[in-house]
Amino acid sequence: MELHAQQVGINTTQPQSTLDITGQPTVTNTPDGIIPPRLTRAQLIAKTAYGLNQQGTVVYVTDLSGTLNTATKDVVHTGLYVFNGTKWNPLQKKMMGFSATKNNSYSVTAFVDHQLQFTAEEFDPYNWFNTTNNRFQPNIAGYYYINANASVYSISSALRILMIRKNGVRFKQGSSSYTSPVAISVSVLVYLNGTTDYLDLAIYSTTDYTATATPAETYFQAYYIGD
Image (cartoon, rainbow, N blue to C red; front, side):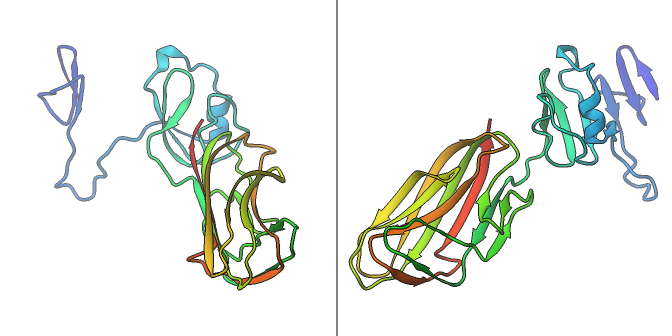
C-alpha cells in the first residue's frame, strides 16, 4: 500500500483518488475485487450504532435470519445494502412479486362470489402467494401493483365481474356483459400492511356458467412498488 498526500493506493504508486485499488488482471490465481463486511441479517438487525455519520456504509447480508425492524425492513434478500442514515437499502434490485396462472375449467354459481383457484405459479421468489388458499399475502408493508385477467366463456347474456378482494371484501373490479367468449381485466395500486392484509380474486355472474381457463388468459400477478 502506498500513501501519497491524502490519497491511498493499493497495487499502485500513483493513486488517482482518495482510495485507488489496482487489480491484477493478468494474475489468474489472484481474485480481484473488494469484499465489504459480511453479516447475517440478524447480526445487522442487532447493531444500533448506525446513524447519520454512517451514511453510505455498505455491507453484504449473507442470510435472512432475524425479525425485521425499521432500519432493516427492506433487507429482504441476500446481497449488498447501503445505509442512508435511517435504513438499509438494497444496491441491486430483485424481482419482488409473483405470477400465478390457471389451466383448467371452473364453474360459477349465479349471484355468488366464486374465488378463482390457480393451478401453477410462473414465479414467486418470496413465497407471497399461497397455492392452498389462493391468497397473495406479502410480508413487506408497502404499495403493490396488481394485475389480473380471467377468461369468461358463455353463450348466455349476463353480467360478469372479476374482482380483486382485500381481506375477503370487494376492493376493485372489472365487468363484462357480452354473450361471446371474453376476458375481463382489472388492475390496481394497493397498500398492504405486510402482516394481516391479503388479496385474492373472485368472479361474480348473474347466471351459472362453466369456463375453460388457459395461462394466457387467466392469471393473477403482483409487484412491490415501494413504501
